[in-house]
Image (cartoon, rainbow, N blue to C red; front, side, top):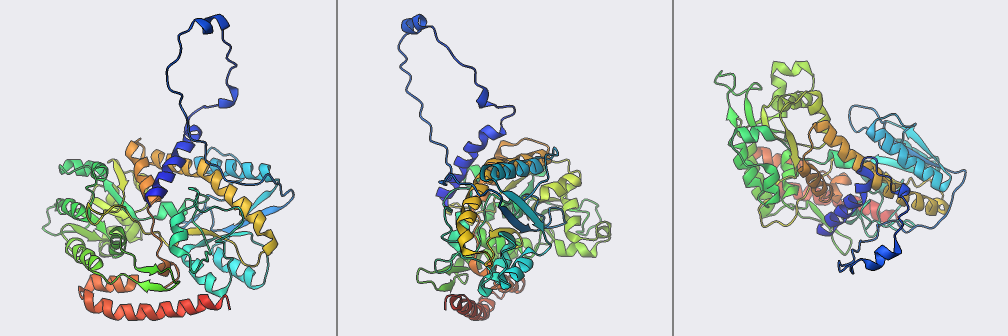
Amino acid sequence: MTKRILALVLVALMTLPFMACGADDTKNPTVTTDPAATTAAPADTTPAVTTEPELKPDLPEVRFDGTELIIIHNPAVQQYYYEPWIYAEGYNGDLINDAVYKRNVAIEEKYGIKIVSIEDENPANTAGLASQARSDEYDLAMCKMSHVGTLTPQGMLYDISDLPYVNYENPWWDSNFAEDTTYKGQLFGMVSDISMMTLSGVRAILFNRDLAKDYDLEDPYELVANNQWTLDKMGEMIMSVSDDLDGDQAYTDMDRYGMLTESSNVNHLITAAGVKFTENKDDGSIAVTFNNEKTISVIEKCRALLMDDTHCLDYEDLSKFPGMSVTGSRFSYGRILFAADHFLFTQGGAMLFEELNTANMESEYGIVPNPKLDAAQEEYYHSPDTGTSVVTIPSGNDPADLERLGILLEDLAYHSSKTIYPTYYETIVKIRRAEVKEMGEMMDIIKGSVAYDFCNIFGIDIYTTIGQAFKTGKIASTFASGEKTIAKRIETLVAKLDAMDS
């Protein structure tokens, strides 16, 4: 993943001109020189400065005049899993809207096409029905990641592993997704810069920076910079924060804790430790790989830490407090409490920034990667939210149209890397109301370190087994029985995938 993170840094450098206010290098004045003055000047011994050429897609100069690129996707406005990254009617002053419109106009004008948006609350189901009817009414479908696993065995999606003119090694694609979800050379969806939904949903660690200072704790940004941000270090900081604020001798929603938790935290912390739940082998088989000492160690650490009810409060426990009636949602109520300085840490994505802003959080807050297991671990790892979207091509499309779709997809992803991602970062900074240089560094780390587990995307439920082991503490026996069940599910899935080629 190191190469991918370096590639992301190159993309960030490429986008700097687009982030500069008022930059216009198309209007450089003509420079003239006096020959005499030039002759009299001393020789310049400064070494010539060379710059790397800008990375661009390798695409032919073609046009598709009069055609449409029809994209079906989640609504741009809804409570969860909204998709504002695909279409905009025109400029309206909103940063994201204007970036989307700018990108789309560039593609439309370059190729003579019209981008058509179809909003649907379940785009995978609608696109799947179209594929079943052999209809080509949708060129692209922005499907939930988990729905890729549902549609693929039914033959509803094209294998896009060798789509003409698309290079998944380019940094505007997440090559981690291709590596982790390709099955016997076949790939049925892809994460890219076309939509920021996946990035915004990646679970990392949000922290209250002012609380860390109040309790004389180390700055998480500095811990990341010094390779000291580990599970033990985060645990140490959590155990340093516990206060009965209202003095009623009981720990409730009115008190202060080290972390606002939820049961799924353990899954993300296992991934953060570098554990793969399953692994695609070179021979095409899928191996169950979560039953090992590292996984057991992480679960044991999480049990000792996250089940301490004087230092951690679970979202689930918020339901029993009367304050939750204000929102009707334990998740919304938990974020209101986080905004009111009741927690040092919580796990979530950058999409929570807007909620914290709405809750008028006054303290400075930030985001860091999920912690490494120890300092010897080379990389950070993060789990995606499988409810977020990936780009797919419904199988109802004419195979003869795949070259056009490949060209448009590659250029759409490229232009998104120059407009959408920089604007997404700028929006996050504006929501936070404070410029912090470390924020960009953290977002680049998170963006480049997402691990996509094949079986979780393809509906092989491993998290239930992990959750049972975490709750009961009977790790060995739970793993032994769960591993057998999971292996049978994988066998069934493999049979369905292999049948697609028969």
